[in-house]
Length: 439
Ligand code: ADP
Ligand code: ASP
Ligand code: MG
Image 1 (tube, rainbow, N blue to C red):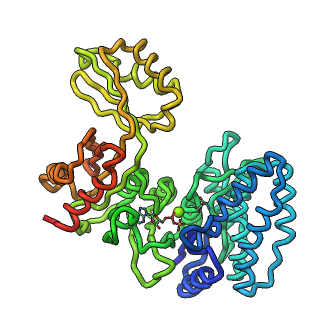
Image 2 (image 1 turned 30 degrees about the horizontal axis):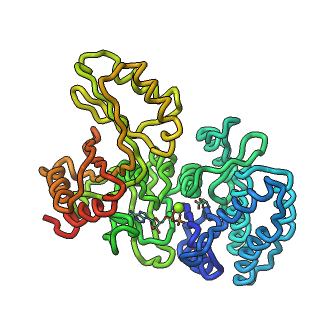
């Protein structure tokens, strides 16, 4: 068996955490490919090394002095090296990094050094080979990840490597320019490595015992999910359940490699299994709830809209022209709403409104702002009667006004729009009706 093990930032924030990680790896022969993140927070108010690197580079970019900031970063790594009593000197690496900062190597390069340096420490600690993803994880000239070429290069690179450490979060273009994934992207690297070596399992080690039914920052001690499908997970992670990066599903999904989310601080817990298909029913009607704040809805009214061919296309074309992607588009006979991220929309608002007026001459257009979207997800929902009814009864009971409803055609999700202020109360009400009351 071959397993890829990815460890998140909090799992590698200090020497003590490294020791836990070492024990986990040594406890199972099959844990042969290790993907580390940069050191994360050691305590609540701490700063992640990735954020320290971004801040440090922002100074370098403006030609300001960044010695003190870089010294803090060096200290974080040195504490880990000292705590593990390793015979390792990162001074030459830091000299090179400082030099490249002065040459303005870019914020992607800067951020990637967090994983790079942690990878060097990890490889030294475990006695595994260090494989720099800049060699084999490839982005094209536009900075877009090239899945096919990466698979070719990385599987070749790891072909005869028994045990390796491959830092997460970054790769490079053909000319060597470093590119990172978006934040939380080490999860994607883990998945890419799992595909390249055709792993039996991709273990993703973090600071919670698996995927929970709802965000633990909103629900006190939420129940865990034993098994979830890729499809359900994608819906939940896209909608803000940040345990696993939403794009981490793709590389392993086609290969049928299961992901197991585990807790570094509680390794005996089984965690959550993420699989292609399962005949196992979830414990509750719903599998999970997630949501995000900060949406706006542009509501368009026009009599006889339903018979005007091309109406929807013309409206969406206006959003396309201004490079805005839409989240949902609920419609009625004479009404159509387009939901977008408010932060992307706000600067272009007036241009888009006048574009819509020109394109379809509506009777009325208005904007609702500060909306939150909540996804209630579950593969078992379609075979249960009354699921939507229970959601809306629970929301009414909690005094939450529902502003939008959208049911996905897969019938495995119901999306609800509420005001930002009602976000937490709505999630609590839905959790309570399905998990606590369990009627
Ligand atoms: P890592 O640094 O290991 O990659 P992350 O911080 O990216 O970890 O993800 C784990 C965190 O995700 C948890 O600590 C928790 O606060 C948050 N989280 C949000 N939604 C959920 C959920 N539904 N289940 C579990 N954790 C969640
Ligand atoms: N270190 C990066 C971040 O903080 C990537 C990761 O942790 O997955 O976003
Ligand atoms: Mg993460």
